[in-house]
Amino acid sequence: LRKVNLLGMLFITGSVGSKFTFIFFSWLNAELGAAQLSFATITFLVWAIGLGMFLCPIVPGTAVYLFAGVVLGAQAQLPGSVGFWPGMAIGSLACSLAKMIACVLQYSIGYFAGMQVKVQQMVGVDKVATRAMEQILKQQGMKPDKCSILTAGPDFPTSVLCGILKLNVPQMLLGTIPVIFVSIIPQTIVGGLLTKGGSDKSFWSMVSTVVTGLAALVQAAAMLYVAYAVLTTVERDGHELKIQNRPEHSKVAELTRKEESFTAKFLEVTKWDAMSNMHAAVTLASTIAFLLSGFLQAADWALTENVCFRKFKITNSIGDSYDLDGLEGNALNVIILPLGAVSLVLACLGLLMHIIIGKMMAVNAAADVPDVMII
Image 1 (tube, rainbow, N blue to C red):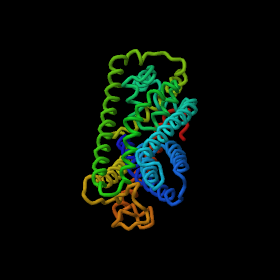
Image 2 (tube, rainbow, N blue to C red):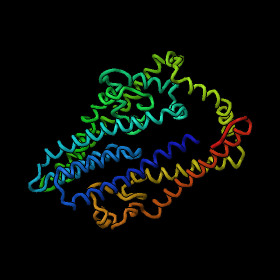
Image 3 (cartoon, rainbow, N blue to C red):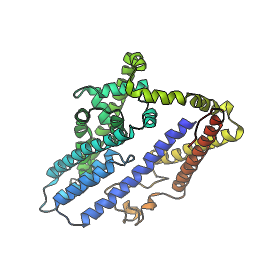
């Protein structure tokens, strides 16, 4: 059930985070539009903002590319500006540059964090699955499986993992290049097309929908190929990867051995049959809270009318009325009462109970294992 809770946390964090990311970008779009800056200045600001947002783990790259397309697409169509398609080319270039620099910065975060043995242990540098992924990523050039991981994987975690594994930076960037063609250019153009007006607005809206669908299809196919490539590598080289004696992982193995007794005891006390009625009730309650919160938020995708969060795009205005897909001047109005608030409260309660039961189980496990410190 604790694994179900973790999946619930990831889903809810992604769902809520994406909503408020789009609201933030909408506000930035309005501010930049009202500032009456030159196209070159706005391009630099979009690049800098995008670079900063890449360093936030919950912000997806898609939101950054759409934001760049919306802002630069609108600015490029103003009288005397560079024009729509040159604007999209400049926007794609700015996003590509921001993405590559962000990869290096994210790599640096992973590199320095990976100096801690506990961090290496958490990502499983000595586990077969991680070593299989490392083997793929260490390939020279632009091999399909390597590029798929670097292109389809989540932006922040993938580059951070490369840093923890201390991979070759130029080779990492080389394998990341395909993201420019399968994600950055299409999604920047989609953002720009959202700003197209005039008599052919419906046509460009249809093109935007098609491009979005194709980009999603490519992303899904790449993720499936990543899973296939990793599983194939594990099946083919799993035994060799498991028995590898790597000096750089000796401290991780030593830490794992020290914690082996505690880990075994923790697994024992967290078995359903071994829990007391109170512990089982709290665990079950936390899982139910996450599931109910997740189902309420997922309902926005399945129902014709949203019940948790109002529909809001980067091109919408926070100050507009609900009838115009705005938020009537308050970003928190994106939450639909009462079910939206209920969903967030359930998620917070689920998180609180998850933390409490985790600490209680850790204390119970440590009671039978000497020299273990619970943080």
